[in-house]
Length: 128
Image (cartoon, rainbow, N blue to C red; front, side, top):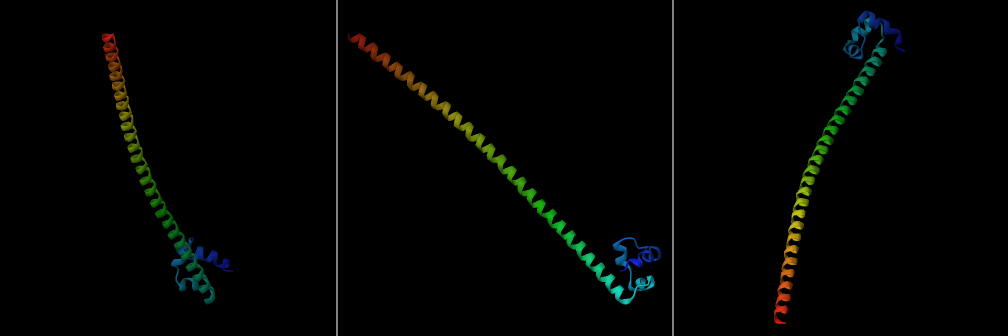
């Protein structure tokens, strides 16, 4: 309905963007040729547009903040995983060392048993 004023708004007022339209005063709209109710309609439409833009910007800002929190949580999870991996590696190293020590002890016992059996055999041979 207000399309008929577009040329006048662009040429007479120089307005080419919504932001420029929002800067126009009621007297500017009268100069372009709008009637009182048409001016009210335009002002409401511009206010609605501004509210939509503000809501969109707010939503985008919230999404950015949410993404930042998610990234921080992911970073913390990565660091926690790294610490857990390092702890698991240290525990595995200790386990291998304990198993090696256990094998050494088994070898010592076998050697001691073999020496004991050899001593018993010598003693038995000496008695015979």
